[in-house]
Image (tube, rainbow, N blue to C red; front, side, top):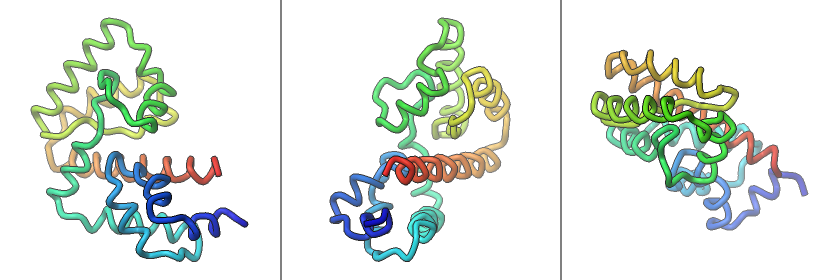
Length: 166
């Protein structure tokens, strides 16, 4: 049985368990996508999940953005976020880096009303910190759009990881 057949044969609870964190702590997207089974290919599965996300109203997007953890300082992380942040060495901050991440996280949330979001895969903490410093100066509309773009990138990376591991 190939991967697509396995996915199409998953129970609803197994499907949600597998794909529910593609979008951080937003398993209802996977639940809606489940209703579109059977999928003709893996691209269709991903396209359906992206379409569900993209059709959300701004207030729902804001809820999804706020489901994301603060970088480098958050203690309660999903397994996906923990692995992603650890792979970028965000768990190995010096005291100075930790303090700067903490200040940037606080200031960013005050300014934009959602946490700083970046797809950290392939980036190290110094690069992330530099991007953080630049993005905190953007206007709210540009930053909201950039955060939505980053959420979609994270979702893509997570789906690829699930496929690769199965």
